[in-house]
Length: 326
Image: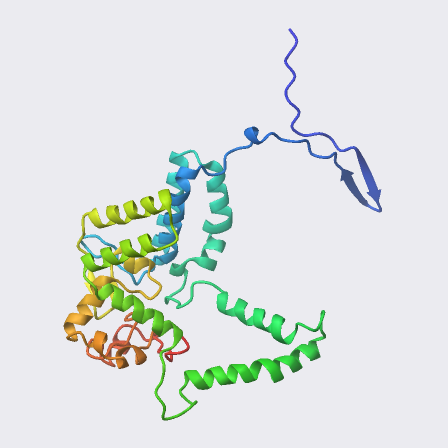
């Protein structure tokens, strides 16, 4: 009985090129593969779920408590092990071998994890990406090096000293209040964003719901996309509210909004501070202009909530950052 020939998956080299002691195989061109025969990387219905899992894993940190009865704090090793197990189990359950291969090799190996996960560092950085460094090089290339192609190192050094450093000096003078001494100080860009988030979270849940709905209805979304967005807002509002572990002294909360917040803010902390300070943050501009951030809990120094000694209680490595540098 003649056996059925198997499909050829690997062709031999056409010939072998000899170059000294080396043998270089010359392979034939790869054949065309039908799109239907290619393995599915990640079906559309699983993408948003994996992205959300990735977002949570990125933001987890030993300083942020879990939302459980015991208010547990996971170690960095436990966070890593839990994140890998969570992604692997989801991919295994839904037969997403290609997605798991990509996630493991590019993001979840121990070497890659240390490059992007927040839990890999002892403190919580104020920046999530390398955009600040990339922006610096972008301005150097477009402003100082635009007229030069592959300049010499001595020329680059000269341009940095004469062009880049004076601009950096002006920025530092503005940050450290050495410019226009005696005049009123404006809020830094991050303080402006912080103030907007604070004022929004100070509103009641009903007011925030109306504000979100009006923003969608007056926005650029039309038809089905607008209806889906409104339905998503309604579902989020209708879900059952939980009880979270909120600590004003350490400035931590176990809610999901706090975990993924850029400024480590949530409505529970904001409303707690407003109540404790009799709404001073909403009426005094000096509250936001005097804010300072740190890499360790408590992450903000708020007069009336945190005393100066609190910064020493919660860790020797706590670092005060001038308001404009963070």
